[in-house]
Length: 120
Length: 110
Image (cartoon, rainbow over all chains, first blue to last red; front, side, top):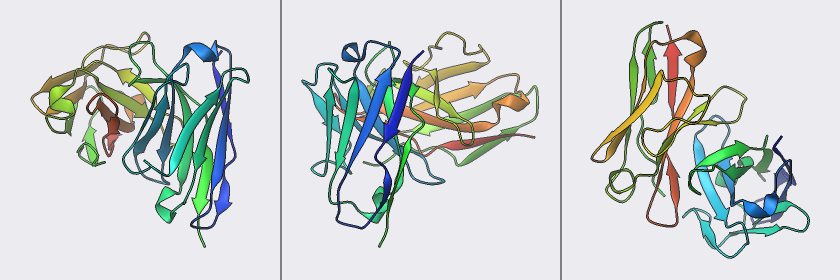
């Protein structure tokens, strides 16, 4: 079965950086486009970024463009999100997610998330 | 990016039908076939229940249906059941390289 396990979250100060990781198993990771989606506590979903199955293409949400970088290592079945210049409004659970079969814009499987708290 | 607009809450009694709206613009909902809906229970991850405006993934009850008119998409839950009480999020592609979610609607079964 599909497993997506995020790690790397924590409590950090504004202006600092983190690298989130997502270990994938139960499917051929290199065949799938992958997303990051975040959800602030008690709030709605916000799409963060997507990376093509081969890493050739990356798209970002407007609020993270220029600060966040999505990447992947298909040899290690791992997805990454480098988050820089963190702001209090970046506080959220960050979900790693696999695209659904129908199209890259849909999300079929989700990890349990890793919480990032940005606070001084 | 501005989120798609959903009502914060909706409610209905068991057996009734309820419709949740999702309003965007011609740059997203109105101009896209890639409109979807997700269901999320408290403390759980979201689940895709509608894609491409009106298609249901395997295993999703046919009580859930989707439609779209101009810049507004809708999710209808027919024959409301207690287990349908959850948060519902719409989503749409925006242009060729972006995805946007709605703010979410909390559905209460009275």
